[in-house]
Image (cartoon, rainbow, N blue to C red; front, side):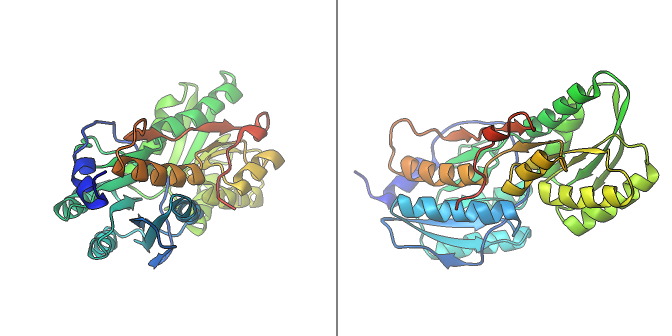
Length: 319
């Protein structure tokens, strides 16, 4: 078998194409390393939300299971820091990079930098439109995520006129795809009366929700771009006497599923951070080793979770 270093060139040149799709927000730990292994991986995470903490844990645990060494870094939602982290991983001479990108616009430079060093990049949550220079991707179809929440509202509204407020994430491709998929799938009888970014920040989301319910006291539904913000939105609505507003959200965390069960959330779309992290590491190791049956693009399963199917929610975070 060829050495890992020589496999890089083969892996980086694998051809393929996929539509651009994004996932929720980013995270990870500060720079660090896990156990020694035969393959060394760099994991560049995007920020410090619950999603990314779980993603980091999944990457580290699966790397250990695959006898791989992993170094991690946190880009703290800054594209410049992301590039610096990638440069640091290159200096460590890792065999491949796993990247939960901060911004799709930053990817071109990131990929070029790694490619010039002969180090392939594997993407989590997003696949670029041209995958020729990328090892692979574990993809979450955020347009479909948004559409699933919209379909729940359509069914719940039952053809009657209804209003919905949107608490988006941070402006950019990830939130735009999520909200776009939601709005495109809404039926004509459901009208979006407010759409403001919560910046994936619960405190900001609560402020947005307070203003939203004051402006639209008869609001029927709210679509919130992640569960951490959704809990803050629920708090704001309840304080304003708007307990009847039904909230749909995204992630499928343990807390989110509990909130669906007790009625704080009406529905949420589960896309497991654990599954994303495990898929990324397994795929990278398999693609570097040129194993048969390893897909370049892996679609992460999505589950619309309501009170009727709580048991179908996948585990979100590793133990």
